[in-house]
Length: 123
Image (cartoon, rainbow, N blue to C red):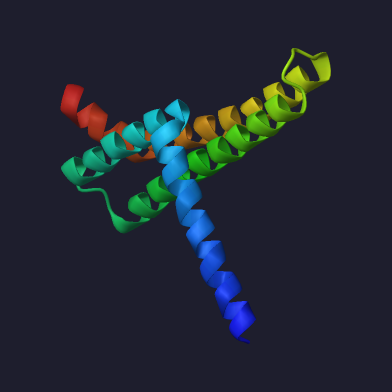
């Protein structure tokens, strides 16, 4: 049983290390985290309700998670085949496309949450 607990503690430590590596070294994660902070500020400013907060946090988590996986795929591809290769390029493009799906989903959620607030503000 103690081996199981030690294993879980190590897993948590590795996860936290990865979290901070992403936040301190990956420009796409840094940029998307900054955008997440902007939308968190907008949520506070417009006093969005609990359901909207939940949707917003899910969208932020989705984008950051998929971007993190995309970063991992790109790092593995670059390690395996550092020179240009059509198949590696295809793999990297598909992984990047997954980020686009997540970002478009997050954009749709943002529009559902903020469109009425922006209409009141500007129109």
